[in-house]
Length: 416
Image (tube, rainbow, N blue to C red; front, side):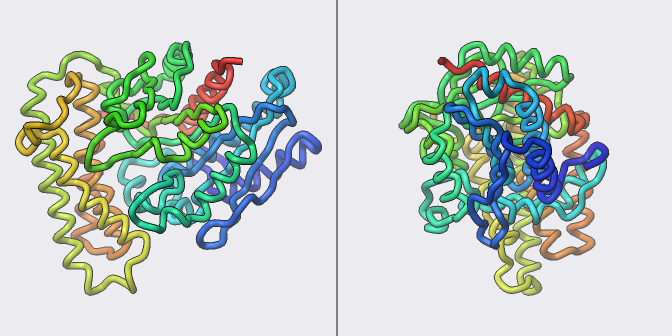
């Protein structure tokens, strides 16, 4: 890999093989399963200690790039630092990409320092039932995903003291979700982010109702307590994140942004939040309806059943209006749980959701059925998304360095 771009899954596999060849006896690379389409699920192991760390990349297809870059950086660091292996009695295991099929669909074109438009034109984000970290869903597909079975099998085999799931967001800041608290980790997260000039995410909509353990670190709620929006329930209790708990392991979901947004770190009260939430809700309903109309016009021309792209488009369109009901005062139920205090950071995260969802749907529909109308729509909405949040590109090296540092900090924060 050269330049400021994400590595492909094949580049990650080649680099992992080269690391193994350069450190015989210390590193190993093996196939631990196959994807739905027959691609190998590869595990790189470094070290031979009794305490296992499992690092999972590529759980979301549109985030596999940063995960792959982080895996290579972190594996190389572990291979060259005895303190992370022998001194800690640890072995590190890296699942190079848990959804290589989805990653392949998202790798249509990789460009140096992409624009927001570049990112969305080639985006693929699978239907939630086709994402391998979830264990329970009404759709039976979830229970038979070979990628999920592979990941669960690795947790059963390794019984990791720590599982790190590498994720990324398009716009926002650095943050961390934990299944159990690791005291002191927030300080190290913030210090690293400041050194790399990446903002913290201090109001993540993915963790709106989660307690925090310090700036940028969110703790998974106990079973039965609200986790997030009703429209997009994460059901973290029934995930491979929580599955590691049966062996006493902690899971850290490490998020790094592609583009930083300074408002994501602003904890001042949001001015006129009620009006802003109403505007965001109205825009989300309007724009998802626009994509829904484009989809109906395109249906007669779609190949076969449309496959994974169509399923993803349909789910995203359906979620939009329901999501607005979770926070838009114009349509929100009077008996809904109260929203947390609306800081600028929290409001920004909601506004990002409101623009991102219909843009994702339009972008994936454009890949299914390219038309001048959809080309223009994706270009216009991408430009509006970029301008609305005054974003700046975070170099890939800094994204992956932040994730690697966070994984090491989480490991060193474990109670021994």
